[in-house]
Image 1: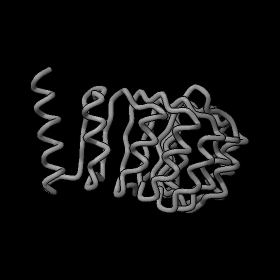
Image 2: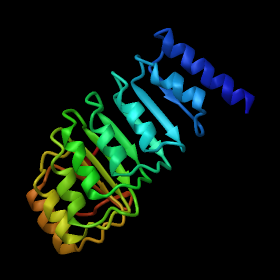
Image 3: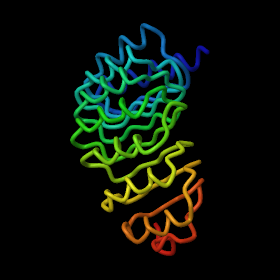
Image 4: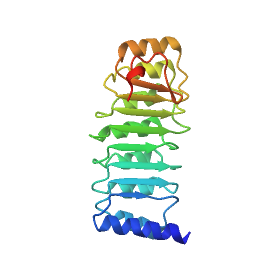
Amino acid sequence: SESEGTDMAEQFAAIVRGEANRLVAGGPLSEAEWAEVAGLAGLEELVLDGGFDDARAEMVAALPGLKKLVARHASLSDVGLAALARCESLRELNIPQAGCTAEGLAALAALPGLRSLRIGGPDLEGPAVCEAVVSLPALRFLHLIDVPIGDAGLAVLERRPDLWSLYLDGAGVSDEAWGRYFHACPNVHVHLDQAHHDRDPGADHHE
C-alpha cells in the first residue's frame, strides 16, 4: 500500500540521517528497496517478512554493522547460510522457516559473536543439527523450532553447559534423556514446546 511505501521511505531516510539503525519490512521488498538496503551502512537490525533468499543473503552479509537479522518465510538454503557466515558483526539470527540443512548451519561457526540463534526448517533433524550449533563459539540462546533432534541430539547439546537458554519445540526427547541433560547442564534455562520443562532446576528463578 501507499502508506507502507511511505513508512519504508521514512525508515530508509532515518537510517541514512543516522537517527535510526533498525529497518522493519511488513512484506517482501522491491528491487529498488533492496538497492537502498545495500547502501545502509548504519543498519544494525533488519526484520523481513518474506522475499529473503540466497541472493539477498549475499547482499545482507555485506552490511558492515548488521547485528540482528530476522527473516520469516525465508527460502534460505545452505548457500545462503554460507553467505551469512561472512557477516562477522552478526549477533542474533532468527530464521524460523529456513530451507537449509545441518551442513549449512555448521558454516555459522565462522561467526565470532553470534549469541542467539532461532531456527526451524523441514530439512533440519537429528544429532547433526546439534553438532552444528554446539560449534558456534559465542552461542548463549538457542531455539530449535519443530526440529526433531531426539535423545542423541540432546546428548550432543550437553557439550554446551554455557548456554543461558535452550528452547526446543517438537524435539522428541525422552524423560530419561532430559534427566541426563539437567545433570550435565544445571544452569541452562530450558523451555520445551513453549513452556518451562518441569524438571528445569532454574525454572523458579527465571527472569
